[in-house]
Length: 81
Image 1: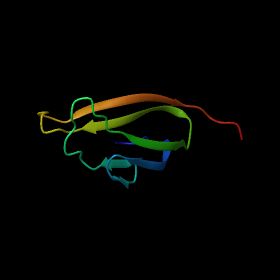
Image 2 (image 1 turned 45 degrees about the vertical axis):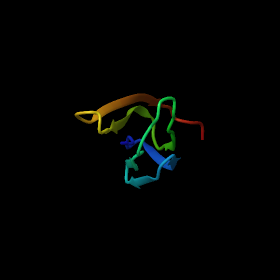
Image 3 (image 1 turned 30 degrees about the vertical axis):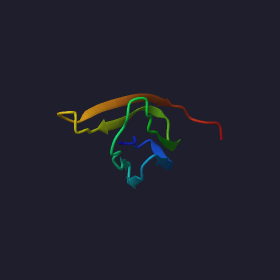
């Protein structure tokens, strides 16, 4: 997962270990996901500045021929001081 430069990582945890390197988060693989099974990670960030940003996630799987990329558009607003 690529965090936009406008946010700061507060915490990341989930069903597997999460490693942070700057604005890049790497989630350790899940060995197997069975039908109806869910896996979940929670990523908490804090806005460092306002802006129109994109959170980008890349997913890899043995069943996929190539990496799948998903983007989540988010608008960050300036808070009251």
